[in-house]
Image (tube, rainbow, N blue to C red; front, side, top):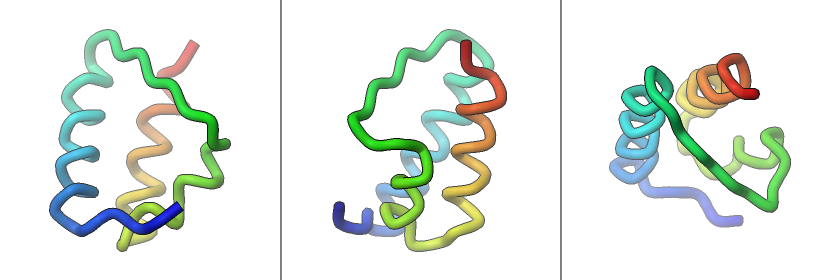
Length: 57
């Protein structure tokens, strides 16, 4: 996987932050731990994954 540009990483974070309050279906062929290299800032990756994992069913 290649790293997302900062603007795209921020956009994905915003999308997940807003959608996490509602319903969101997300599919990936990578484990959550494999998402960290996508983000230029580990804090953003951790926060995004925390929002997704803690509210998932």
